[in-house]
Image (tube, rainbow, N blue to C red; front, top):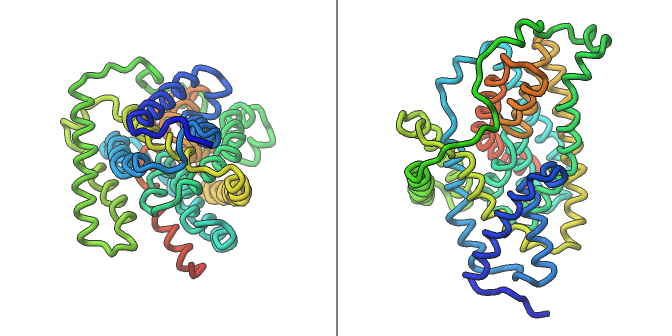
Length: 387
């Protein structure tokens, strides 16, 4: 059957309309639960399997080459190191515990599952990335490890199937724990109502004021860092590692630049970074063969399920030993599994007003750590499995 749209200009139009439509659909509850990332990927699968667009095209590779590194850098420009001083001992321990638990369980289960999954060792690193900083880290690590498009699409699907019910539980957990007397006896470490009611914070999900100068500088920084780190990585890292090395350099450069005062004043970096990454992810669904996709996604889903259950249990045990307040335990998990803004929304929904900014900071730090630990775990699983 002949493909309907094959020209580069036509595919550019398709990608932009897919991203715009996916963002517009977020006003509806069902699509909001899916999120824009999976919405874009699913639309891509439908379009390629109905022969509207081709499965492969040079334009897709170009998007991967030029957009992913820039979007990672732009998103990380929100990492403000001065905010770290707002965290005391307990949230720091909770965050370290969450990241540590994800890494340990991913390695243990990776030894079992990686040989049974296509590019399984890469999936181990990708899932560590997404559960220590959200979906942008999954995409970043997939690119750094030169993962196939089909594997990346299956990983996104597995992540959604397992993490969505978990997130529903985590959102409901504050009310359930507060109402449970048994939980109060099991975990007596918690804030008082007075402590939770304190704290000043800016309104979440408020309208954002942008300037064309902000966009211009963010794009300049993002693509500039991508260019410089690519040149450095190709010269100092071996051919088998240079893409992963480039990801680590991009993360390090972006965090360093984020500390500069002029960069801190730039607005809209998370939104712009998301938009650029969605343009790349729009092409991920195009390369998916549905028959192969369903088979690989099942094993990945089982891996993700076991991984999330295992890391939650280990995280709760560690935090219970250190007598961490359960509010920090929950926010650290939400910050890792999704992102900082979602952790803030969780705190706001639970009326933990004094912890809204803490949740945001925990999520941002987890996102910055995700690329480092994800690359480490991927190569650790590869070495342990002899792949």
